[in-house]
Image 1 (cartoon, rainbow, N blue to C red):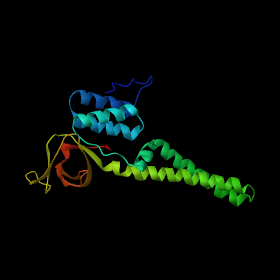
Image 2: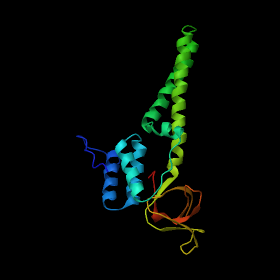
Image 3: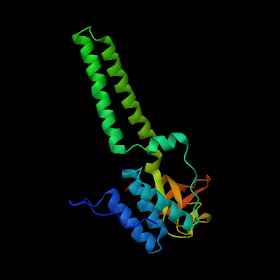
Image 4: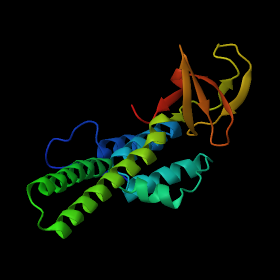
Length: 203
């Protein structure tokens, strides 16, 4: 497992990929697999291509006997784009598309250049929208923090358990009710868990 990343020379924001990565490593060394996986996943939201974060996440999940389904080709391509870069691509795409439309009003010349600018703008906008659509499901992801967490049939403390969740397992948040959250596992099973038993990947 890769160790601590060197801190940059300038002051580093608390919520950064490196700080989350180092925090996750600390939890992993302390044997807290759930908190480790949670912070590795949060780091990946900011740095999806970081090989150390991906490797350590895989290592901790494997050690905790948590299987991670392989990503589709589309998810791999979309997830490899930095969200900040994708957002700025959208802004640039809008600007290029606007410039192409404006130049059409001003002059009839350079049709090929105008068409090329509009095409590039549309391509950048498509990239941004695709990245947003692929990231959207991850905004509902959560990680189980407490081992043998009961997922109950109803959102009450003494409700019958529908299933039991393992620490470090990733689930999808479907609904919320007071102190309980309805989650769905990768296999499609669902149940209500106490809010304190899971951590949302998107804080």
